[in-house]
Amino acid sequence: MRGALSGWDVIISGVAKAVQLILSGDPTVLQITFLSIVVSGTATLLGALIGIPLGTVTSLKQFKGKSAVVQVVNTLTGLPPVVVGLVLYLVLSNSGPLGFLRLLYTPQAMMLAQLVMVMPITMSITISSVSAIDPDVREAAMSLGASPLDETLIMLNEARVGLLTSVVVGFGSAISEVGAIMMVGGNLLGYTRVLTGAIVLLTNQGEFAEAIALGIILLSLAFVVNILLTILRSKFAGTSSYTASILVSPAESRSA
Image (tube, rainbow, N blue to C red):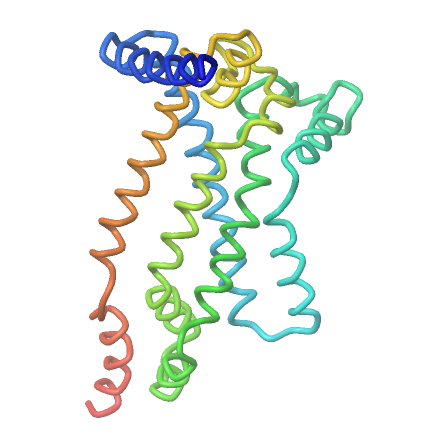
């Protein structure tokens, strides 16, 4: 009973410490939080810029081995972070093929590790979202003489909520990742230490209140992102005039 109470005391102390750190504007906490957002945000953006187009092409095009490609992408969404970290460590180390770039133990290496984790997630959700669109939408666009680019834009517009979800899920995966970024980033204070790495270090040192405080900050970031997702989903949900305008314009041009 005593141990349970002490555990609750640690949690309560952690909550109080989190409020104190946030309100006081602790420079170390702000630096760690800012770096977490920059690293994860950059990796998510790059993952979306690569994963969404690849996922769209994979979904819309028919080619030999498509099923195998989809299965591989879905499998890569479950990549073990420590395996990603190990491979990138060997590749980026001084004796590795990319050692000359001197990226090991830098924020750029952490971004690369998170990009490897995020891109399959973004691509997989994009494939599912685009594939779930009613085939009649594409057939209508083709029958009305829409160009291949217009067809793709129509499909992306119809899948906009799913694409948004892929970005948010990718960001959540990136900012909560710890194994790979610690292996390639080194968890160096003031340079490559992010929230997840700091939480692990503080826990190992027995500084549970501080670790819980940073954990609350990390959860708060995830909460804010999910609120933004909810707002954007409600804004983008429903019938869009964009698709309708593209579908109507070829017919109008013909009648003219």
